[in-house]
Image (cartoon, rainbow, N blue to C red; front, top):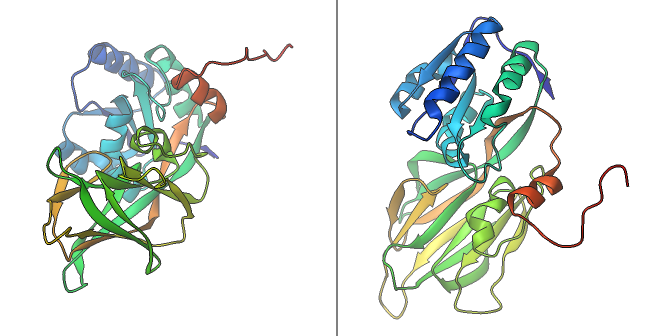
Length: 294
C-alpha cells in the first residue's frame, strides 16, 4: 500500500550502534530530508527511542536486520512504519543502501513508498500453576527455547492447540514467522517461506533424530513449549526473542506462543521480488538466469 507522512511529526533516525559509514549516512539523510521540508531527530539509545517514538511518523534504522529487530517491537506497538538503511551484510528487511538515501527522502516526502505488514509472535510465559505471567513479549523473527549450557541437549514438548506435536531431545526448538524463515530458522534447517504467508514454522535445533523435521502450521494455531526433565534431571534452558535477551525458564513453566494482534509495517521503495532477493542475498547459483529481454 502507498502511504504519506504526517506533517505534524518527525522522522526518527535510529542509530543504536557505531558502524563504518554511519556518520556520513546520517549526515546525508538529514540533509535530504531537510531539502524536502521534512523534520528529523537522531535516536541513539533504546531509552531515547521509547521517549521519542510518539513524536515519529516513521522510523529509519541505520545498520542491518539486527537493528531493525531491536526496534521492531516498539514500532509495531505504536503503529509506526519502519525503514532500514543497510550498513550491514545481508539486510533481508532493509529498504535501501546509503547510495539510495536521496531516493528514500524523496519517496517519504511524496508518499511514493510501499509498505507491507509483517506478522509477529506474541509470547507469554506460563507459571507452574498454569497462570500467565504479567508481561507479553513480541518477536518478529522467532522465539527460541534452547539449552543454557553448552555440550548438553535438552528435552521439551511442543503442543499445538493443546495436543502433543512431538517430544524433542535436541539443542532446542524455534517457532518462527515467515519473516524469520531467512534467519535462525534457515540455519536450523527450516523452510524458506514467502513473507506474506499466513503460517508459522516449528523447527528443532540439532535434534537427536534424523526424522525430526520442521513443521509448517497455520498461524491461527497456539503453540506451547514445555521444558521437561530427562531421567530425573533437568538441564537448564532459556528462551529468547529474535536473538536478543535470554530469559530463564524452569520445569513446570511453559511458553504460550501465538500470532500477535500487532503487525510491523515495513517500508519499501519498490515492489518486492522475494525470489530475486533470495538469489541475491543467499548467493544462489545454478542455471543462468535469463534477463527480461530474453
